[in-house]
Length: 180
Ligand SMILES: [Cu+2]
Image 1 (spheres, protein in one colour):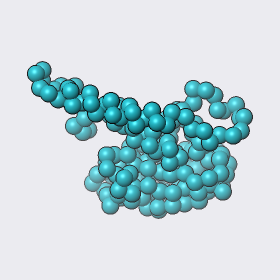
Image 2: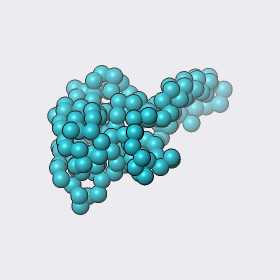
Image 3: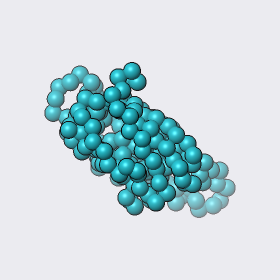
């Protein structure tokens, strides 16, 4: 996929392992800044202690059931580092089928989460470049590819879809989701 996949094949005697270790160490520091999401004030039993980013629950909602979909949102990943549409609104409690289409020539992602969770995902991408490309709240789409996420938005607020291919999110590759 990319050059990161080959990092463990560096030749002995090169200085690359030292540089790679330094990169990992700095990424761990970034990740440690935000270990918990303190936004949940309720006592719903879905907030079990081991729930964290990437495991199907989030401050932005949870994995939805396909037979409960009430709205389909089609979103394109553009090589101009934007999503189209760049924002959309859903009602709290809705289960949304997010259809992510990549019409361009670059690989992109779509990660559902709070702004804080976007940072967590970005840090995980650095510490674990070989992480799964698809999860309950995120997909990676290659050029020409379409993938779907089914997500239940059970909390009101402002959330994001972000792309964490290096350089994309900081360039503005984020779509705003309003749950009212
Ligand atoms: Cu992207």
